[in-house]
Length: 440
Image 1 (cartoon, rainbow, N blue to C red):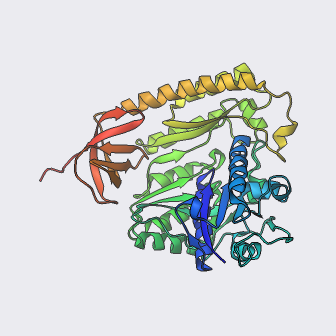
Image 2: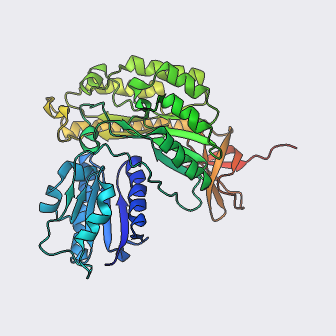
Image 3: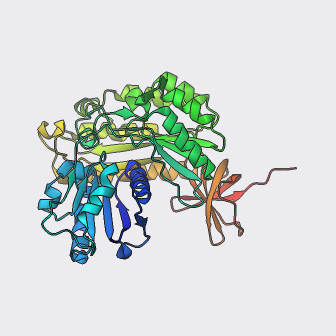
């Protein structure tokens, strides 16, 4: 049986991390990754269900792959869509294999059962579906970083207990569970020995982390002790848990990168309540101001949603007001997408899609202007940046505030080297800088 596999990943950083989990599990059982899908005997799509558009993209890709496969390879659906649709993906869309986020350890045996010795899909066999929640955190699986990678991502928890009324995550990734902190430390030490210097801790709500007597602040302090790790980041933080003690902890960490993703979603208290976000716009703004007072260099990004059921022009105007006042460096902006099982499906009336789309366009215009203004204000300032690689005569580096800087210095820089750069211009959304040598 041939065993070359190729992974296609959609959606959030957690899905990209899971791609590493799947790759490591398969390789341990003798399966071989390939860099071209045309060479693969097995193609696995790790999917997202957060919005209908993400599902449509994955289903379109599945249909295309099935047309080309002629029964000569397995095309499987993994991730959130697998948990959401389960057998429908086989019966209606033709998937050969369906495995939810907690079932990846079973992939090697399932794949072997799918294929005959001639590398054909087994005739008459029932194509496997693995759903349900196993409280799986994949202890002991250490995804390998890409060669020369200086950035690494480590999942510290899986699932979510917040049940925001618009969000499908608890229904497709299960309830919140934290990884054992010793396993997290072991994985980060492994990455550090592999050359990773910039680590990002990921989870649906990392601030809710709690294991072995450690809360999230305690975990950050342990990670800071790891030799070789220079910078620490995390995503995502729920505003309701972003407390004063958390902010004070961040302010006192030497390796913390002052870039915070704090999803606002809406600037209307009425809409926030319907969303079950458990904070008000006043509380959100207070936390922003406190953070900026204690960590002046902090950069904020956010998520914003328009068109949530019953949203009025006044509600939307309040969102624009908050965006203007806070001045996020960047925002992921979306139109509300109804999701199965969520409480928001029962909230009426719905917003006319044309009205929601118009609001989204207006919001994008406002935030794009703010992003441009914030970026241009960085010209002339100096920052520390970590080199991530080179393209021709250009060096790409990333600041602690997660800004990419292009240096036209005409010479290669070592990956992972921390340099001081001065911003001399802006090219599109990208900063242009020059390296500043320390005076001797």
